[in-house]
Image (cartoon, rainbow, N blue to C red; front, side):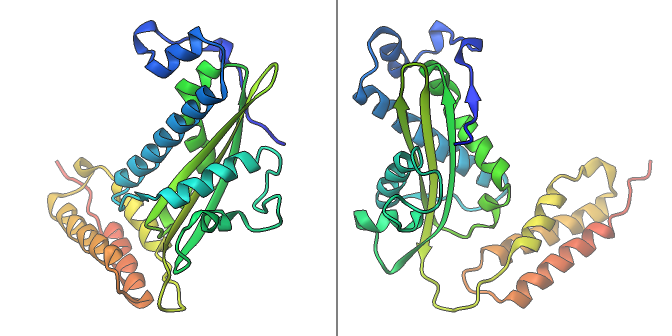
Length: 252
Protein backbone atom coordinates (compact mmCIF):
# COMPACT_ATOMS: atom_id res chain seq x y z
CA UNK A 1 0.00 0.00 0.00
CA UNK A 2 1.23 3.50 -0.78
CA UNK A 3 1.12 4.79 2.78
CA UNK A 4 1.45 8.40 3.81
CA UNK A 5 3.89 8.10 6.69
CA UNK A 6 4.04 10.65 9.49
CA UNK A 7 6.66 10.62 12.24
CA UNK A 8 5.05 11.42 15.56
CA UNK A 9 8.37 12.14 17.27
CA UNK A 10 8.48 15.53 15.60
CA UNK A 11 5.24 16.63 17.27
CA UNK A 12 4.51 17.33 20.94
CA UNK A 13 1.18 18.00 22.64
CA UNK A 14 0.96 20.66 25.32
CA UNK A 15 -0.34 19.28 28.61
CA UNK A 16 -3.16 21.83 28.61
CA UNK A 17 -4.36 20.65 25.22
CA UNK A 18 -4.71 16.97 26.13
CA UNK A 19 -8.27 15.73 26.01
CA UNK A 20 -9.57 12.89 28.15
CA UNK A 21 -8.88 10.50 25.31
CA UNK A 22 -5.33 11.80 24.87
CA UNK A 23 -4.60 11.35 28.59
CA UNK A 24 -5.79 7.74 28.53
CA UNK A 25 -3.55 6.96 25.58
CA UNK A 26 -0.55 8.49 27.34
CA UNK A 27 -1.06 6.74 30.66
CA UNK A 28 -2.49 3.32 29.76
CA UNK A 29 -1.64 0.50 27.43
CA UNK A 30 -3.45 0.91 24.12
CA UNK A 31 -6.53 -1.31 24.04
CA UNK A 32 -9.01 -2.11 21.28
CA UNK A 33 -11.51 0.11 23.08
CA UNK A 34 -9.06 3.01 23.08
CA UNK A 35 -8.31 2.57 19.38
CA UNK A 36 -12.05 2.55 18.70
CA UNK A 37 -12.57 5.75 20.67
CA UNK A 38 -9.68 7.44 18.86
CA UNK A 39 -11.10 6.30 15.51
CA UNK A 40 -14.53 7.71 16.38
CA UNK A 41 -13.01 11.01 17.49
CA UNK A 42 -11.06 11.41 14.24
CA UNK A 43 -14.12 10.38 12.21
CA UNK A 44 -16.31 13.04 13.81
CA UNK A 45 -13.66 15.74 13.45
CA UNK A 46 -13.12 14.92 9.77
CA UNK A 47 -16.85 15.10 9.02
CA UNK A 48 -16.95 18.50 10.75
CA UNK A 49 -13.99 19.70 8.65
CA UNK A 50 -15.79 18.66 5.46
CA UNK A 51 -18.90 20.59 6.45
CA UNK A 52 -16.84 23.64 7.44
CA UNK A 53 -15.21 23.52 4.01
CA UNK A 54 -18.60 23.42 2.29
CA UNK A 55 -19.89 26.29 4.42
CA UNK A 56 -16.88 28.38 3.36
CA UNK A 57 -17.88 27.69 -0.25
CA UNK A 58 -21.53 28.64 0.48
CA UNK A 59 -22.77 25.10 -0.03
CA UNK A 60 -25.21 23.07 2.04
CA UNK A 61 -23.74 20.94 4.83
CA UNK A 62 -23.98 17.17 4.67
CA UNK A 63 -26.26 15.47 7.17
CA UNK A 64 -24.72 12.62 9.17
CA UNK A 65 -26.31 9.21 8.60
CA UNK A 66 -25.84 6.26 10.96
CA UNK A 67 -26.23 3.62 8.22
CA UNK A 68 -23.61 5.31 6.05
CA UNK A 69 -21.40 5.58 9.13
CA UNK A 70 -21.61 1.84 9.76
CA UNK A 71 -20.69 1.11 6.15
CA UNK A 72 -17.84 3.64 6.19
CA UNK A 73 -16.45 2.18 9.43
CA UNK A 74 -16.35 -1.28 7.86
CA UNK A 75 -14.75 0.10 4.69
CA UNK A 76 -12.08 1.84 6.78
CA UNK A 77 -11.09 -1.58 8.12
CA UNK A 78 -11.35 -3.30 4.73
CA UNK A 79 -9.03 -0.90 2.88
CA UNK A 80 -6.19 -1.67 5.28
CA UNK A 81 -5.90 -5.03 3.51
CA UNK A 82 -7.65 -4.25 0.21
CA UNK A 83 -6.97 -0.58 -0.68
CA UNK A 84 -9.36 -0.40 -3.64
CA UNK A 85 -12.99 0.50 -4.32
CA UNK A 86 -13.72 -3.23 -4.56
CA UNK A 87 -14.38 -4.93 -1.22
CA UNK A 88 -12.72 -8.22 -0.17
CA UNK A 89 -16.03 -10.00 -0.92
CA UNK A 90 -15.97 -8.67 -4.50
CA UNK A 91 -18.75 -6.11 -4.06
CA UNK A 92 -18.43 -2.37 -4.65
CA UNK A 93 -17.31 -0.31 -1.67
CA UNK A 94 -20.29 2.00 -2.10
CA UNK A 95 -22.61 -0.92 -1.35
CA UNK A 96 -21.40 -1.32 2.27
CA UNK A 97 -24.09 0.91 3.89
CA UNK A 98 -26.83 -1.28 2.41
CA UNK A 99 -25.51 -4.18 4.51
CA UNK A 100 -26.44 -2.20 7.62
CA UNK A 101 -29.92 -1.12 6.55
CA UNK A 102 -29.39 1.97 4.38
CA UNK A 103 -32.69 2.25 2.41
CA UNK A 104 -32.53 0.84 -1.09
CA UNK A 105 -34.62 3.76 -2.39
CA UNK A 106 -31.63 5.96 -1.64
CA UNK A 107 -28.37 6.05 -3.56
CA UNK A 108 -24.79 5.83 -2.30
CA UNK A 109 -23.03 7.72 -5.07
CA UNK A 110 -19.60 8.66 -3.76
CA UNK A 111 -16.68 6.88 -2.12
CA UNK A 112 -13.23 8.31 -1.47
CA UNK A 113 -10.50 6.34 0.32
CA UNK A 114 -7.15 7.23 1.83
CA UNK A 115 -4.71 5.90 4.43
CA UNK A 116 -2.19 7.14 6.92
CA UNK A 117 0.61 5.61 9.01
CA UNK A 118 2.40 6.98 12.07
CA UNK A 119 4.61 5.67 14.84
CA UNK A 120 2.70 7.83 17.32
CA UNK A 121 -0.93 7.53 18.35
CA UNK A 122 -0.60 10.99 19.93
CA UNK A 123 0.21 12.37 16.50
CA UNK A 124 -2.85 10.72 14.95
CA UNK A 125 -5.09 12.11 17.70
CA UNK A 126 -3.85 15.63 17.12
CA UNK A 127 -3.44 15.60 13.34
CA UNK A 128 -5.44 12.68 11.95
CA UNK A 129 -8.59 14.53 10.88
CA UNK A 130 -6.62 17.35 9.25
CA UNK A 131 -4.45 14.90 7.31
CA UNK A 132 -7.39 12.79 6.15
CA UNK A 133 -9.17 15.91 4.89
CA UNK A 134 -6.00 17.13 3.16
CA UNK A 135 -5.41 13.78 1.46
CA UNK A 136 -9.01 13.53 0.25
CA UNK A 137 -8.81 16.99 -1.32
CA UNK A 138 -5.39 16.20 -2.76
CA UNK A 139 -6.78 13.13 -4.52
CA UNK A 140 -9.59 15.15 -6.14
CA UNK A 141 -10.21 18.73 -4.93
CA UNK A 142 -13.55 18.90 -6.77
CA UNK A 143 -15.42 16.05 -5.12
CA UNK A 144 -16.63 18.01 -2.09
CA UNK A 145 -17.85 20.88 -4.26
CA UNK A 146 -19.44 19.09 -7.20
CA UNK A 147 -20.94 16.24 -5.20
CA UNK A 148 -24.70 16.82 -4.83
CA UNK A 149 -25.11 14.31 -2.02
CA UNK A 150 -27.18 15.27 1.01
CA UNK A 151 -25.87 12.90 3.70
CA UNK A 152 -22.50 11.35 4.43
CA UNK A 153 -20.10 9.90 6.98
CA UNK A 154 -16.38 9.30 7.41
CA UNK A 155 -15.23 5.88 8.57
CA UNK A 156 -11.87 5.50 10.33
CA UNK A 157 -10.14 2.31 11.48
CA UNK A 158 -6.79 2.15 13.27
CA UNK A 159 -4.69 -1.01 13.43
CA UNK A 160 -1.64 -1.33 15.69
CA UNK A 161 1.61 -3.14 14.94
CA UNK A 162 4.84 -3.32 16.93
CA UNK A 163 6.25 -0.15 15.37
CA UNK A 164 3.35 1.74 13.79
CA UNK A 165 -0.32 2.64 13.74
CA UNK A 166 -2.03 2.22 10.38
CA UNK A 167 -5.22 4.16 9.73
CA UNK A 168 -7.70 3.58 6.91
CA UNK A 169 -10.24 6.32 6.19
CA UNK A 170 -13.28 6.21 3.89
CA UNK A 171 -15.72 8.95 2.92
CA UNK A 172 -19.15 7.77 1.76
CA UNK A 173 -22.04 9.99 0.64
CA UNK A 174 -25.59 9.37 -0.53
CA UNK A 175 -28.90 10.99 -1.42
CA UNK A 176 -32.44 10.35 -2.52
CA UNK A 177 -32.54 8.73 -5.94
CA UNK A 178 -33.14 11.13 -8.79
CA UNK A 179 -36.50 10.85 -10.49
CA UNK A 180 -35.00 12.05 -13.75
CA UNK A 181 -32.28 10.26 -15.65
CA UNK A 182 -30.35 13.37 -16.67
CA UNK A 183 -27.86 14.60 -14.10
CA UNK A 184 -27.39 18.37 -13.88
CA UNK A 185 -23.77 19.50 -14.23
CA UNK A 186 -23.19 22.45 -11.87
CA UNK A 187 -19.40 22.42 -12.10
CA UNK A 188 -19.01 25.54 -14.28
CA UNK A 189 -21.35 27.52 -12.03
CA UNK A 190 -19.44 26.39 -8.93
CA UNK A 191 -16.11 27.27 -10.56
CA UNK A 192 -17.31 30.75 -11.55
CA UNK A 193 -18.75 31.39 -8.09
CA UNK A 194 -15.58 30.28 -6.30
CA UNK A 195 -13.45 32.43 -8.61
CA UNK A 196 -15.62 35.49 -7.90
CA UNK A 197 -15.26 34.88 -4.15
CA UNK A 198 -11.48 35.31 -4.43
CA UNK A 199 -11.78 38.81 -5.92
CA UNK A 200 -11.00 41.85 -3.74
CA UNK A 201 -13.75 44.47 -3.45
CA UNK A 202 -11.38 47.46 -3.03
CA UNK A 203 -9.86 46.83 -6.45
CA UNK A 204 -13.11 47.53 -8.32
CA UNK A 205 -15.60 50.36 -8.68
CA UNK A 206 -18.55 50.28 -6.26
CA UNK A 207 -21.06 50.15 -9.13
CA UNK A 208 -19.52 47.17 -10.91
CA UNK A 209 -18.93 45.40 -7.58
CA UNK A 210 -22.60 45.83 -6.73
CA UNK A 211 -23.56 44.19 -10.01
CA UNK A 212 -21.26 41.30 -9.16
CA UNK A 213 -22.91 40.83 -5.75
CA UNK A 214 -26.33 40.67 -7.41
CA UNK A 215 -25.07 38.14 -9.98
CA UNK A 216 -23.55 35.99 -7.21
CA UNK A 217 -26.78 36.03 -5.22
CA UNK A 218 -28.75 35.00 -8.29
CA UNK A 219 -26.23 32.24 -9.10
CA UNK A 220 -26.48 30.84 -5.56
CA UNK A 221 -30.28 30.90 -5.71
CA UNK A 222 -30.27 28.94 -8.95
CA UNK A 223 -27.65 26.50 -7.66
CA UNK A 224 -29.78 25.68 -4.61
CA UNK A 225 -33.01 25.15 -6.56
CA UNK A 226 -34.17 21.56 -6.21
CA UNK A 227 -35.81 21.63 -9.63
CA UNK A 228 -33.77 23.30 -12.33
CA UNK A 229 -32.55 22.64 -15.86
CA UNK A 230 -29.10 22.38 -17.36
CA UNK A 231 -29.90 25.41 -19.51
CA UNK A 232 -30.73 27.51 -16.44
CA UNK A 233 -27.51 26.46 -14.70
CA UNK A 234 -25.43 27.20 -17.80
CA UNK A 235 -27.09 30.60 -18.25
CA UNK A 236 -26.38 31.53 -14.63
CA UNK A 237 -22.72 30.55 -15.04
CA UNK A 238 -22.39 32.62 -18.23
CA UNK A 239 -24.03 35.64 -16.61
CA UNK A 240 -21.74 35.46 -13.60
CA UNK A 241 -18.65 35.11 -15.77
CA UNK A 242 -19.76 38.03 -17.94
CA UNK A 243 -20.23 40.17 -14.82
CA UNK A 244 -16.72 39.27 -13.68
CA UNK A 245 -15.25 40.23 -17.05
CA UNK A 246 -17.16 43.55 -16.99
CA UNK A 247 -15.79 44.60 -13.59
CA UNK A 248 -14.38 48.13 -13.70
CA UNK A 249 -11.17 48.87 -11.78
CA UNK A 250 -11.34 51.30 -8.87
CA UNK A 251 -10.19 54.79 -9.82
CA UNK A 252 -8.87 57.14 -7.15
